[in-house]
Length: 147
Image (cartoon, rainbow, N blue to C red):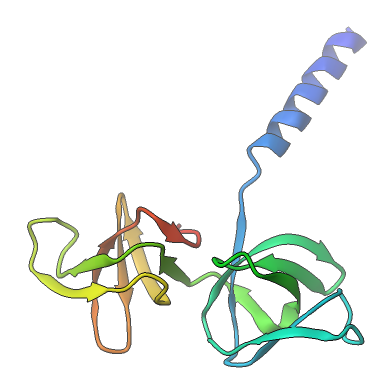
């Protein structure tokens, strides 16, 4: 009996690790320091100057998160500079449509690498906004997590 319980425990433990989801966050401010280590005393590696930039958390230590961006740059950011994900970056050029359909009116061409604010997502489409446009794009080949 104990052997069966242990087998079930290890199965669920390893299975839950295997399906762990990626954690995406966004930058809270226009200027965010990325450090070599998880400390305010650690030297600054580089500085992000793009609010809402989506980044992926790959580690954490106390109040710091180790992150990686869509260009594979990595480093440590203090948790106060991060917020829940609200943006994506297309990894290829996209067409912005008025409605979530390929047969809808195209509004603009969105270049790859552009930060887009997510308003909502439905099936294979996300409603996004930029400074000039609001509309729908297909959510394939993007950097960031869509809910």
